[in-house]
Image (cartoon, rainbow, N blue to C red; front, side):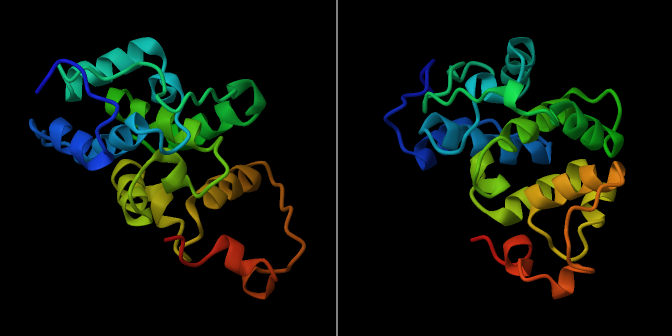
Length: 191
């Protein structure tokens, strides 16, 4: 493998080059998909995948040593985290349901929070290849939180709903989701 990924490669080529040294962590698969998408300008992840530069370098050394990952978003995406007033709340929510002091989970949390700034489904904003990948990633890293989504609500809406409920805010006017006219926007297929 050459020292630097060629940005003109397609997503599948980049994915193949990154998976030449598999690891035991399931996060490796999901990160590889996100990075392959990010390298071809898919998704909304900003520079460093939304991580701090030190975290990004740790992730590269841990999972992708010598792969020559770019630091800047090839898409030019420059998300403004100042727009995201709930950034700390999202981080705290995910940390509440994660294994403490696990750098791998901390990387996943930062990347998910960056993806929440996008306007598409969370799996698409992250650059994952399907909603089922996002579901599996959340179930692996945050099993108790993921289990709370027992009605298969769309993940970004689910995370924000958790924030609202934690604050005692119930913005929906319908007495229950089942009678709401917006039900299809919150539940159902995303593919």
